[in-house]
Amino acid sequence: MAAKITDICIACGACIDECPVEAIVDDSENPTGAETYYVFADKCVECVGHHSSPACIEACPTEGCIVLGA
Ligand code: SF4
Ligand code: SF4
Image (cartoon, rainbow, N blue to C red):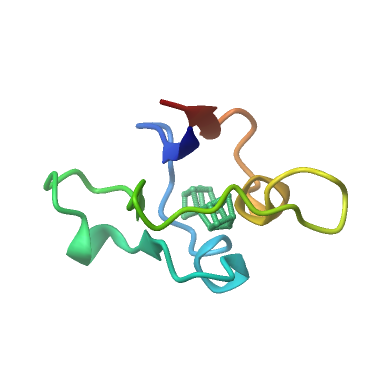
């Protein structure tokens, strides 16, 4: 399980600096070529932020954009 950024990402940038392990890259570095931010699943540690959910999910203004998946 790791965080996954879905295609409704608006590339706002709010999540990237919140990740404690630098697992998130911006759209210019997304290996899939999509114009969204991207989580490297092998780096994500499913961290817990200030409100008991992953820091990136807490930071993201787009409801449902980041999900915990396989
Ligand atoms: S869950 Fe935590 S470790 Fe994983 S991408 Fe989000 S902020 Fe980074
Ligand atoms: S905070 Fe959400 S909408 Fe903004 S770049 Fe990150 S995943 Fe995309």
